[in-house]
Image (cartoon, rainbow, N blue to C red; front, side, top):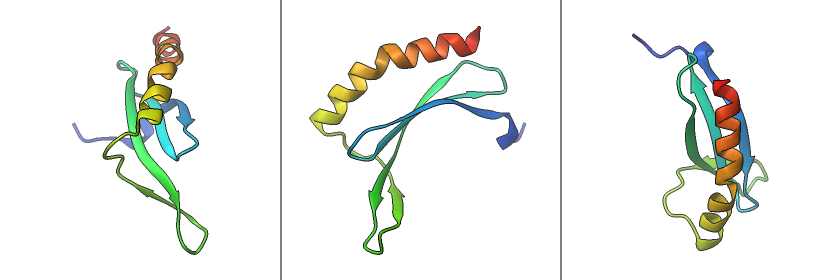
Length: 80
């Protein structure tokens, strides 16, 4: 079965002040899954660019750990 973008639903998204994106997705009514990344940054021309996450700073890790209960609650709510 091929991937179908219409079945991929973003449940909720968060963004850290350093540009790290965290999203909760659900595909075709399945179990919600957490996506960490991409990392946003400002290009020299002022537009926004995106890159792979790679390593997390300790500050980002703390933020991510603080976010876990909110992510879990959103996932449980999506499962009904």
